[in-house]
Length: 301
Image 1: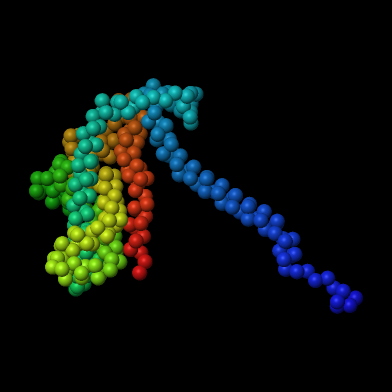
Image 2 (image 1 turned 90 degrees about the horizontal axis):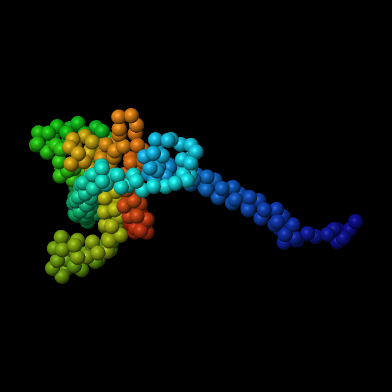
C-alpha cells in the first residue's frame, strides 16, 4: 500500500469519537460530587433538625419517647414547649441579660479595637509586630486556664454574681480577633486620604472617626458581628462567675430547664436552644456578604 493511500484521521475526528465518553464521565463525576455534598449537608443539618423537631413536641410526646406517632417526623407538632419556656421558666430575664452583655461588649470591642488597630497600622510603634503577636496569643489562650485567676480577681473586687463584669471578661474573646481584623483592613486604606485630612488641620482621632472609619465600614461591621456572636454564645465564663438565676445569661439558663424528679423534658431545653440560636442565624444570614467582604478585604496586598 502506498503512503498516499493511508487514511488520515484528523484530531477533530478523534475528539468527536471520544467526546460522548468524556462527557458521560464528566457527568458521572459531577453527579457523584453533588451526591456527596448533599449527604454531607444532610448529616450536618440533621442535629439541627432534631433539635427543632424535639422543641415542637408536647410534654406527653416527650414522655412517650421515640416511636409510633412520635418518630423521625412526628404526626403532631405543638408549641407548648415555647410557651412553657417563657411562662414557667422565666426565660425572658436571661435573654435580656445576654442582650445587654453582648451589645455592651460589642460596642466596647469596636471602639477599643478601632483605636488599637489604627495605632498598629499607622503609627510608628516600636515592637508593633510583637504587640500584635501577643494580642493574637491571648486570643488563642485556653479559656479554662483563665477562669481561675479571673475568679480570684472578681471575688477580691466583690464583682461575682453580676452580669457587668462579664462585659470586661468577654473582651478576652472579642478584642484579639477584632484588633487583628481592623489592623489588616486599615493597612489597605490609602495613606493619602489621611494625609489630606491631617493637612487640613484634623487630628489623628478626627481622621480616624471621619475618614478611616467610614471607609472601613465592612471591616467594622464584621468585627461587631463576630464580637456579638462570641459574647452571645459564651458559657464557660458565665457558669464560673454567676450563681443567681436572676443574673444568668441565656446559654447558662438552659441548664436549668426541663429537669424534673423522674424525667428530663428535652423539648423545653431544645426550645430554649432554638430561641437563642435564631437571632444569630438571622444575623449571619442577612449580613453574610458584609462578613465575607470584611474578612477578605484586607487579605490582598
